[in-house]
Amino acid sequence: MSENAVFSRNKVLTIDTMNPKVKNVEYAVRGPIVQRAVQIEKELREGVKKPFTEVIKANIGDAHAMGQKPITFFRQVLALCSYPELLNDNMFPEDAKSRARHILQACGGSSMGAYSASQGIDCVRQDVARYIERRDGGVPCDPDNVYLTTGASDGIVTMLKLLVCGEGASKTGVMISIPQYPLYSAALAELGAVQVNYYLNEEKCWSMDLRELERSLAEARKHCNPKALCIINPGNPTGQVQSRQCIEDVIRFAAKERLFLMADEVYQDNVYAEGCQFHSFKKVLFELGPQYSNTVELASFHSTSKCYMGECGFRGGYMEVINMDPEVKAQLTKLVSVRLCPPVPGQALMDLVVNSPQPGEPSYTTFMKERTATLSLLAEKAKLTEEILNTVPGITCNPVQGAMYSFPNISLPQKAIKDAKALGQAPDMFYCMKMLEETGICLVPGSGFGQKDGTYHFRMTILPPTDKLKILLAKVNEFHQKFTQQYS
Image (cartoon, rainbow, N blue to C red):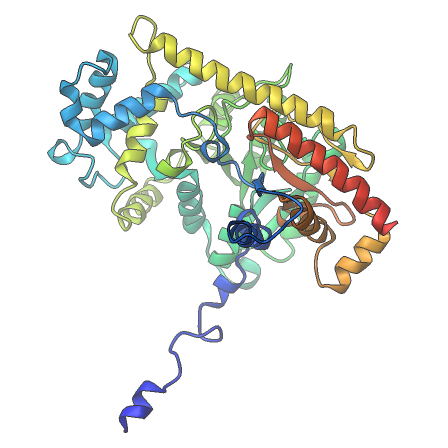
């Protein structure tokens, strides 16, 4: 064989030889719209003239990127943990130093640079368990059922890996809400599972409907083996907060139909609307009595990325498993050991979230002031977003009861729908791409989350600073009217 023949051979890994399941993965939150937004930012830096001077990325719930300030206590403790020599500095409060020592003593070599146990640092899991008990009014939590994770996403994907098996009609089906957070559809595509859609009721503020769950399950059982039901509460992208009655209905449904429950509760502190309250699935499960609390299998998830923290980049989170078969639990522990451990700084941050300053401690007043201000401002912006969007002819926005997003319904002219389809685009993708090119506003089309046929939406975060949010909403208003006139 000649030397030239060696160097001119075909690639081993090509689009035709790669894992075909990966090609089915889509993630709209960082999809084509966002990729184009990045290109436009580069063009602006290079001096290309646009009808705007900056790109406003309202596509993702990245709080700090939008200007939200970190919680002082959290960053103080993380600084102390990262550089322990600072423990000798008088500028840090004693409770921050105490928390830092608590965490460092549990780390190998008293360093956050060391690996931790695969399930997570033991004292952090104990703190998480105590937090869950306080949150749920004393319902017991065993630290051995707590797994620290690389954000909530890591825990969700890990559970799906355990659940998925079978081929053909026996292949695992997983019920997910539509609209949904695209992590779920992407993970199911990668794992080769069957996505089983159930639709939230837009007319009733995106509530869950028991009859819709029954319809979805009955249809799915004709071609797969549905094993799990996923719920996001408070909702992403829809911003609803499910009622206690709804959660009871879902638990009874799961018990009756023998479904594994997955409760994505990462926005549990983000509840704004009057009359709404967060109810954890675990608390309701135990309050329904032993016939449910001793039998229904549940995995619930939380994260440092949302709520008042917004610490997305640290990738901290946890999951708690309830009523898991002991042999499966051993396999779960084995599976998480493959990736060695979650990021230790993320574990440390998770510990601070569940073990925050208490009354009488030096940092308590500042911590509560910052926490309250952050959540109050988010509540104001949620209301502002709903009110302004509902003044736009052709846009209808449900109340943003919780989480960090609005998901308004948009009416599109038939000509725009026809032009979009001619380009091979979903109509709301066509709409959002036009908006990006003309205004610099980056939103995610509803088609990236799923929606009922014939309806169109976009997801917009409420995180930008109030002045920028008002500008953004005014631009959306102006663009929608212009777009409607252009295509009417």
